[in-house]
Length: 433
Image (tube, rainbow, N blue to C red; front, side, top):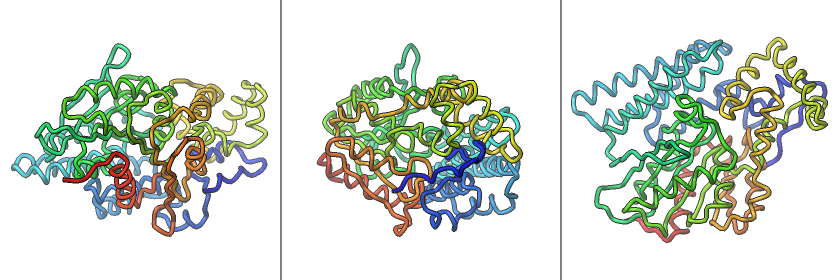
């Protein structure tokens, strides 16, 4: 992996925020044959198509939904995903009513993922009044999936700082036999259904219990409770671990944790303090979250921040964000910064700079598997850096030649699942029944 290209001299910040509009790339070839010139939309489509192998999308549904949408039609982009979610949720409800549980479960899962795309598409609208209704439609579809899936599932209420975090444990069966367990941690803006096709069902098929939870700043914790992210994720993973280890069918010697996307920071950060895991996987390793925010800022703008001239920095950022054509970056900044719980350009950078694992990575004793994909448009180069910081870490490359490029290799989820779960089986000594 190479690092992101530097911003051209004199470029305005609205058009060079690497994480915010997805235009940065480490490999031109990887980005030329996409579904959209707009990197953000292209990635959404890839991520949805990648869920198809686990029933989280249907290829024709996705491609038909995007076909009529004009390149800069933000309203149409949002409306298309909501309409698709509504249509497939109606199919699910009809199947459930007629007693076709398998059909219902698969349709509810697809509908939940389509609604989740709609939730993220709200960032392109002029207001966020559609956010909660769309999120609640997504959540209703998820609940429909829970009610009809063939996998035994139980809701968890995880004590957290005077309140609770929502979680679910899925089991291969109801035998009560002690099993290896995989705890799955979401990324920064991923829906709960996202990780289903990123290893959850695959682990169930191998005989693992699977725990999925929402932490602060994620999904319902943000949208319904207003609880923001935190950098010290050990304060999250430790109470999750306490609850999981209290479950009677969890083998404490075979406990593993997975983190996707920005959880490639959160999980290593937590593991520096939480040592009860036998193995860990990060699907994209992250050392310093702030680089994806500052890496493409013009030098003269970033230098104001670095010199402590934050008022001037905020002014320059505001000017850049309101230049003609800057709406995509401006709306994405609002969307991406919301979970951090602060406002103001310099205040957001202050906060994201706390998300840095370099000072604690050497404390990690858990065997760590780090995935490193060609063309990662958010954290390029950081997986290898993380693996070098963590004693004994395993770095697994995924390449464009394998069809496994982009952030979290969205179109290579079968290959990803095979490699990481095979590694996990071997690491903890698990054999499928």
